[in-house]
Image (cartoon, rainbow, N blue to C red; front, side, top):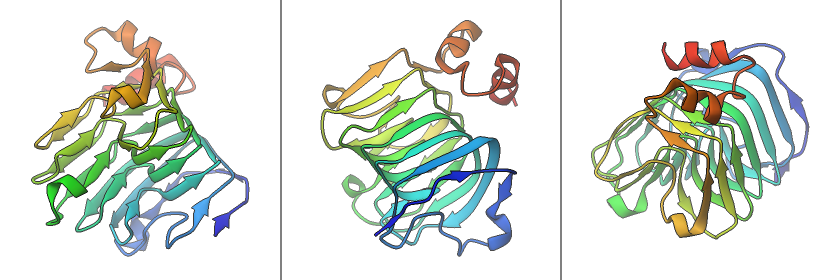
Length: 219
């Protein structure tokens, strides 16, 4: 099953009015398989997990998601793969996306079976994350598998480029960008960089202007 339609966001969207029973796009076993262009609009999420793969998009397959600000809250009560933007991504491209989502993990399943990433829960088969940033929060009492960008990487074809993490993360074990760096190519990425120039280099094209990037980071 797949959602195969190109989407251009024309205005901000606030899903808080849907309550916590709204679970994001492309869920319930469906995958988004096309192009989503946020055109630098804001999407605000507010939901409690219902599916194994949780994010704004439950699943991405041969998809592109770009030019998007993401904020709001996600609460994980019992499921495995959690990210603010996607639960899993297969051979997909995520670019110029900035997330300040707060993710809270309240699951009681074994800590080795919960995977939480600031941008995505799981990435496989050629997925590329470019010019993205996570400046939100992750709080988990149990999870050992927490990363600033993406947590579970299933093969060697995943790349993270020109990206930045400046998040508040409280968990047993935390990786800046991704686990198992032997399976991930990380280029020109910074975490908690003290130098504003490094932020501009890593994330300057996330926003339409450098000034807007710095304003978001300093908010």
